[in-house]
Length: 120
Length: 110
Image (cartoon, rainbow over the protein chains, first blue to last red):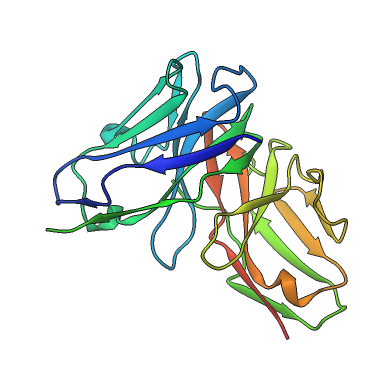
């Protein structure tokens, strides 16, 4: 059974870069059927799509975050990553890595989530 | 980007049916049959319960059903049970290769 697991620093200072990695186990990240993405949820609030990456390297991003966002995939390690630069307190959230069915039809698999806190 | 519009809360008694609406535009909900719904229990990751407007993933109860009319999609839960109490989110593909979520609806089982 395929599983997703987020990892990365839980605490980041304002203006710095939040970096997260998602490790895929129990299956290959190289399937053309899926995109690999990130969704966040500020404490007590709703879900926000951040963006996603395909194993080919193609990326798709939320327009409101695009200028600060870098996403990549490493098929050798079955991982994909997120870097969000110039963070502020508004970026404090639970960050979920997820699998999206093409073409953005649904998010059919979610990681457990990792809390990313922006604070000095 | 603007979110899809959902009611903040709905409630119903055990055994009853409830419907949650999700309103977008012709650039998302109304223009594509790529609407999905998620159930989020407290402290857990969301779980997919409806995709492609009205299809259920394997293992999801047939008490959950989805539909769409124009720019509004709907999730109906029939035979309400205490275990259905959760937050529900809709999402849709949006023109321009993005995904957008609704603001979420808290379901209370009375």
